[in-house]
Amino acid sequence: MLPKPLRPLPVGRAFASFAAVLNLEACAVGPDYKAPHTNIAAFGNPSLQGNIAGQVPLPLDRWWEGFHDPELVRIEQRVLAQNLDLEAAMGRIRQAHGAAEAAAAQMLPTLDFAPQASAYRLSNEGLIGRIAHNFPGYNRDQRAYDVHGVASWELDLFGGLRRGHEAARDEAEAAVAQSAGVRVSVAGDAADAYFQIRGYQARLRVAQDQVATDQHLFDLVQQRRGRGVASLREVDQAQALLLSARESIPVLRVALEVQLNRLDVLMGVQPGTYAQELALSAPAVTIPSIGYVTPADVLRRRPDVIAAERHLAASNARIGQALADYYPKLSLSGALGFQSLSVNKMFTPAGFGPSASGALRWRIFDFGKIDAEVQQAKGAYAEQLAQYRSTVLHAAEDVENAFMSLAQSEKRAEEIGAEVASLTQARNLSSQSYQAGVIPLTDVLDSNRQLLAAEDRQADNQSEAARAAVRSFRAIGGGWEGAVDSTRVAAR
Image (cartoon, rainbow, N blue to C red; front, side, top):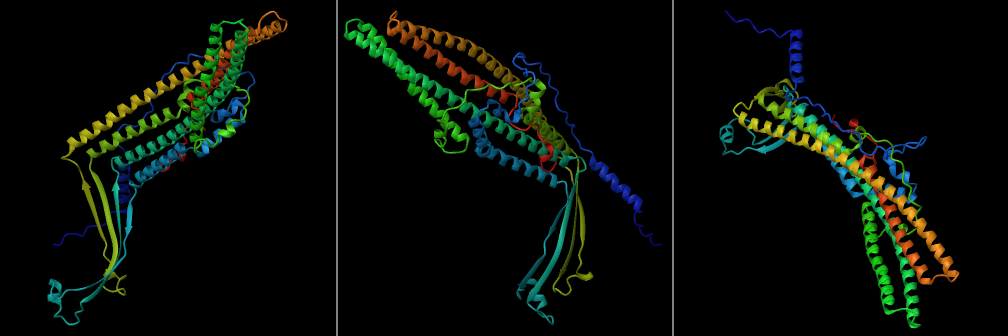
């Protein structure tokens, strides 16, 4: 008795089996990622953080506009458009996007289409030629035509490929955040260099006035020495003061040149390009209000914190990717094609040659190596978690230091301002007393020297206060548009 032929699987049962495979494929081994919870107390300088009543909040992505300096705005625009480090960061984003797209493509079937035509001559001394050359119609010249397509698909039954895609996607988001960090960094560096330039320029003007004052004092003492009124000690003291004043000028010029070159490189041009433009005078520095800043604001805006969190998410996904190697992998492949020795018979039932296969791969005798890979992935996650927590603490440190520096610079500015006002009044009174013949000119020049020394400290503190404000904006993540937009990351 002949066996009964196998009946085809009913459509409903086939659909149910396919749905079961998809449901199995939907599960992914490994821990699901949960963002770490970070507790940071309020910053220790609350008196510094407060908006003036009725003041419009300053856009943090363009904080440099709050200084009301058109030259600074032009510099920032050039830096953000021309900086080479920022251009390199954009290249790293494209690389990360490409890696994410490649990881996503591994979850999809592949199809290779390979038409082929060949012509060849059989050897009469070969195995086929020696047998076939005696047959009627034998022809040594042959042609063959082959048109086929091969498809393959690895079913992601346990989510290894999916975890790999998650890791690549998270790394792409980290690259976006790191690019934002480069933007924040170069914007802050440019402003820092600019305010140092303005500070050195102001101090150079004061130093040149100091040289003129000390030169006048030295000439006067020499005249008095010639009349026998002043001693040689007074001449030497006046000369030492003059040489000390002259000595400070080369140091200031070197520091100024260094910052000018630094700023040109940040703008992506050869050093010396914009030196003439920056030689023009600038308006007085206006320190903008920063506004109230909370730890949550910093964690949300700081690109380095965002990048560290995305690296942590990627390392978590790689744990699942490593765990998936404990389970078997199923691959399906198939080929549909036509093959013939003549074109006329190519696309006929006789020339049609389909094939299908399935392969199961299981590293069942390699669990020791998989154990090591899983431990490596877990160790990498622990490292990234520590790195993330460290980044958060360093972010809080940057904010505290920058705010304290700004607060103390503003306090010192008030004290130096009062000192300059007092010395200005003393210098004016000395001039009046000299004109009345009450005191000698040396006393007037000495008062002027004290005033110029205070003005030098004032110029230096104004530059430092502006730089502290820049560090404050940089510490809270100012200089870019906001949080990472995950929709911009390819292959999500």
